[in-house]
Length: 398
Image (cartoon, rainbow, N blue to C red):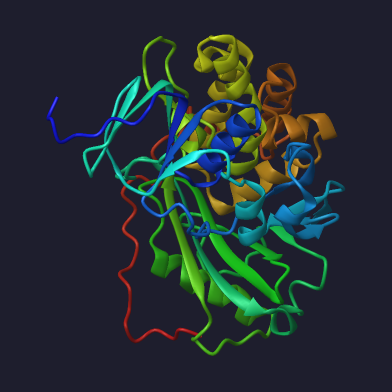
């Protein structure tokens, strides 16, 4: 080893990457009394994206200050409106960051140059030694993988009121108002208040290989708003999301880096959510380290792997449906039992309920011939390399 390289003392765990998953894991490990090293080039930066989840997914240890807005019963629009009697929330960026304090951890404000099973080397030459290393640096590049793509526009609540009233939210709005034709890849609207006087309107595509371009999603968002008489100035803040949905759980093994969070298979293949699951599983990972066991085995028993396998089949189905087929499929799904809906949307290991929910969803999707597309017997590659129109500099932006 180079004589100029400094070696940090040995830690119980080293967490590389301090997004919500990594920060939550490092926080819970420190609370449990472990010696924790945490690595991130900007450890005090607030989380850039907007994160949401079902309230009951959050671990009991997370304080209420981490929640910015609660929607008591969000709405899903398919052939009609479905009111989901399950509280949903938008997380506070500042509140969540503060709740995951790292006062008892040793934080290295640097980038990892090398990440191994028991060592992390930083760009300044420091080498951190740890019994277990968790890699929580998020997802690799998208390429042609099955993707979640979204374009969100932040609109003042009073302007948004014709579509989203105070305390309400649209989780999936499939109403035919986005200007897309029946022979174009489908997308839906997600619109929720953020608790700061604004509402995010976010046109979203799930399952397309390579994703949907931002300019296409923005055009569709503006079409929906116009259908409700909402006109924008063009200066509203916006955010973009574009990431793979098919990141698999880690393989079993010992003496390896442990991927955690979205990097470790906790990205939900059918919804694109990962934060709540990562926070809820932090204690499971910490307990495994305390017992001297492999965290991968504790995080991914066969029941959880079965759930992931079935959700991946759902992702493949989403990526080949038309708009009308998507509406029919979601309409069937949201007539499922409460347990069936939770099994798909959030439960980490309820494999039996998920299997029943998926079977029933296919069985109740009409017309009958569309079921062949759902299970992949027909039109398996319907939207692969779809030629989206290029961005038009002269198109309206408001």
